[in-house]
Amino acid sequence: MPVIDGPWNPRCEGCGRFTSYDADYYIPFGGPCDFEPPDPVYMCPRCREESRRLDRQRGRPHDNWVPSKLDREIAEEFGYALAKYPRNGWSIWKKKGEPLPEGMVWSAEEDKKLMEAMGLTASTEGKP
Ligand SMILES: [Zn+2]
Image 1: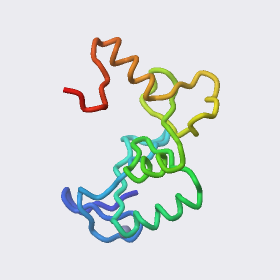
Image 2: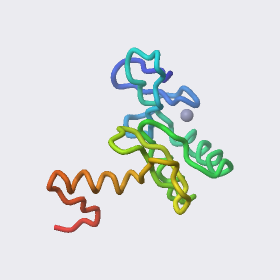
Image 3: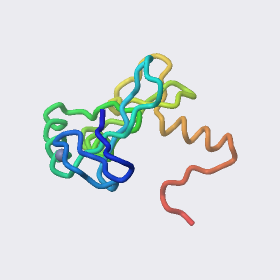
Image 4: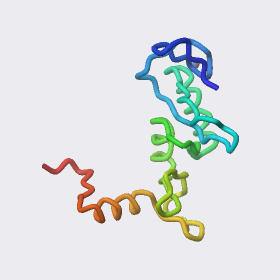
């Protein structure tokens, strides 16, 4: 559980020091007995780098309901992409180039199909 003393003082999950809302965070998956969605978990820059060191030893990003920027950086570094079951609201990291479990799809492809179905174009290349 993150410790938050009031609305503007998030604390780092690792060391307990105050950190800013600009600090990197993730939101973990909740459990079936949770009454509310889990709170964001913040990481101060120092603990984030320690986390990066451990993630590099592990060689894969952590699966979180809302991945941190660090999770995305580790995924990029080790060749992982988000995958999910169609129309699911959450994704998990899977190694690019390896076959997905039965019924799973790459999240980016699913999102593109949904955007096209809504008549929108999924442009990530900064086209005008
Ligand atoms: Zn910290």
